[in-house]
Length: 176
Image 1 (spheres, rainbow, N blue to C red):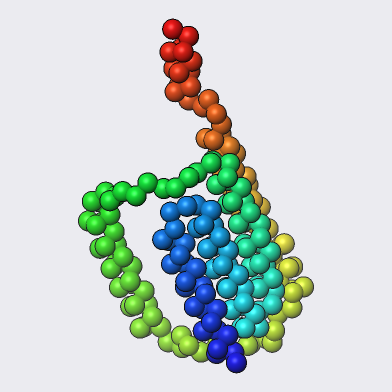
Image 2 (cartoon, rainbow, N blue to C red; image 1 turned 180 degrees about the horizontal axis):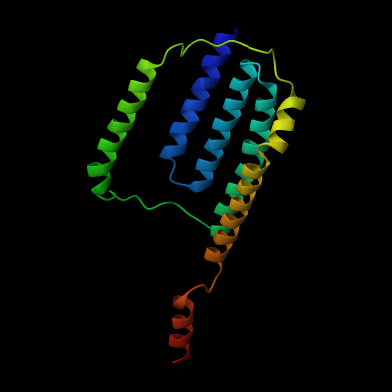
């Protein structure tokens, strides 16, 4: 039963990720990302990591996706224009991907005990996990929230009507 559920939700995750890349409308891409995040939460549940599954749904599929959707709506982004792109991605992108895959393959082939998993001290409780999160990892947690706040303020500043010289020039031409 676990294998069937794993294959089903892994398929949902892959289909959502592919759909995210193929969509031309940003809201459809955000909805596809919600499917990916929710499928990952179910995969965490199948692994027995209930806290990670709940955090995945609450933080990523909930708060972050609402933030993404809010920013997309604020920017009033419509359909993307399809272009052929630049030729630089062919010259730089393909060799970079090959190099990264070669490094990963080398690491995976030389790693000893890669597929071995064991519980050393038993299962970590949610209390222990929250103690680490809010003591040792508090600074990265807060820095991430400040970074997200700066990104929202930047999106609002860019989306303002009348931003830049174009609006001022159009008013001058209208007065003449």
